[in-house]
Image (cartoon, rainbow, N blue to C red; front, top):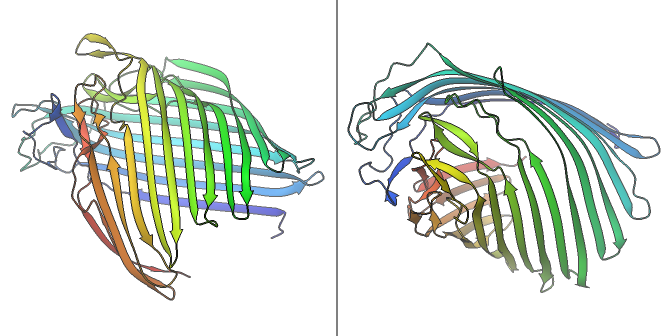
Amino acid sequence: MNADRQTWLTADLNFIRQDPASPHARQGAVLSAATPLDANYNPSGAFLDENRFAVSAGHQRSILNQVTWGSTASFTFSGQQIFRGFLTSIANTTNNAAGFRENIDVKDFYADTHLVFPRRNNLQFLAGADVLFAAGEAEGATFTYTAPLSGATRAQVTEPTNFDRDAEDERRFLGAYGSAEWRVAPRVALSGGLRLNATSEKRGVGAESTHSKISGSLGALLGLWENGADHLRAFANYRSTFKPAAFDFGLAENEGILEPETSNSYEAGLKSRLLAGTLDFELSAFHMDFENLVTPTIVNGQPALINSGSTRFKGVELASDLMLPRSLTLRATYSFHDGKFVDFIQDFAGTLTQLGGKRFEMSARRLGSAGIIFSPDQGFFGNVVMNYTGDRYLNKRNTALAPSFTTFSAGAGIRTGQLEFRVDGKNLTDERDPVAESEFGDAQYYRMPSRTVRAGVAYRF
C-alpha cells in the first residue's frame, strides 16, 4: 500500500434479538402506583429483532499536483421483526392494551466523492458531492388484548399472520458541499462551509415532497495567551443544519410526510490549559432555534411521529479535568439547559393547545457530574463517578414535574501485561427515575436501568 494511495473494503453483519420491556404509565402528575415496577405488559413471546447487513468500499489517492481524491460507497439492508404491545388503560378491564406485529425492511445506498486541495498561503479547500437512495416498506397488523395490571403473567396472544396495514417510503438525497480553513495568523484560524441539499420523498402511493435548502457553518478560533503547554483560546461558531425527518413506519395509517428538521445555532466559549498542562477547562454558551423537531405521539391508537413546530434550546456548559501525580485524575462537568417550545399547537383529547413557552418534556435544566479516576498503565486501577440529573417535566403541558436524582457508579480492576480484569457497577444506589419518554407516546416512560454489576476480561494484542 502506498501512503498516498489507499483502497478499502469492509462488511458488517449483525443479528439482534431482544425481549422488549414495558414503559411505566403516568396517572396525573406522577407515575402510576397501580402498575408494579418493571412489570412487562407485552404479550407472551414478544420480540424486537433485527438482521442488518452493511458493506462499504472506498479509495483515496493523490491526483493533479497533490490534490487528494477520496470516494466511498456503501449499501445497507435492515430487516426488523416486531411483536409487542402496551397499556392503553390503567385498569383491569377487557382489552386494556394494544399491540402490533410488524415487519420493516429498509435498503439504502450511499456514495460520496470529494477533493482535498493542498494548503497554500495558509488556506485549504475541500469540495465534494454525495447521494443517498433509500427505500423502506412495512407491513403488519394491530390488535387489542387484555393484560393483568399485576404483571404476574403475560397475556397469551395469537401472533397475527394476516397483515392488513402497510407503510412505504422512498427517499432521494443529493448534496454538494465545500469547506475552507484559513490560518489568518499564528493564533487566529477561520473555517467555514456551505452545503446544497436537495431531497425528494414519496410515501405510499400518494404523498410526495421535495425540498432544496442551503446549510452551512462558520467558525473562528483565537489564541488569547500561550506559555509552553499552557494556553487560553476563545472560539465561536454558527451552524445552519438541514436533516430529513426519520422514516415513520408506524401502522397508524398516518400518510403525511414529515417536514425536514432544520436549525440555526450559535456557540461561543473559552478553552484553557493551565498549571503546566495538568488542568483543562472549557466554558461554552449556546443558542439553537430548531424547526420541525420529530417527536413521538399516538395516532389512531398506534405509535406515530409528528413534527413539533418551533423549539428553542439555550444554555451554558462547563467541563474540567485535573491531572494529578500517580495517574490520578479529577473530573467535573456542569450544564444548564433551557429547552422550550416556541410555537407548537397539539391536539390533546380533542382540545388544541398552544405549547409555546412550555419546557420541552424530559429535558433536565441542570446536569452535573464529578469523578475520581485512577488509571495507571499497569497494576490496580479504579474509578468512582457521580451523575446528577435535575428536575424535568414529564409532559409537554408541564403539569407533571419529576424531581432531580443522583446516581453513582464505580469500577475497579487490575492490569498485568496484556491482560485486564475488571468489575464495574452502574447505578449503585438503584435509582429508578423516569429518564426517557416511550415511543408509545404521551404518559408512558422508561425508567433508569436498575443496579448493574458486570465483570470482564480483556486481552490486548
